[in-house]
Length: 137
Image (cartoon, rainbow, N blue to C red; front, side, top):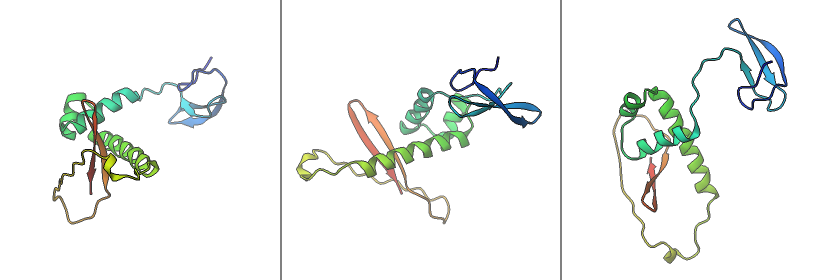
């Protein structure tokens, strides 16, 4: 009996071959998988831990060495996280009365790497009970 890697359901159908291994499609969740797939998966909690390490000022290469994760994967997680934050910022409403904002902190961070434009990156930094927004342009 073949169980789905994603939902654990036993209702799967054959869906071809990948590198000599059978590929299956789950009828319950619709995702595809193959038997003998040894690729490592990371939980959301672990990804959030890596993002928090990055927001605390630990460099991407340092996180790579400490957690034994490729730096390209860390950058991919940071970009996905920034897209989520960007969407939340777009959906959020600005208060009518600007006096509702008690503390507004603006800081600049600029690093010259090359002469090419980069897309803005966003991040949150949680300090105690405060959440700070980090925006890089």
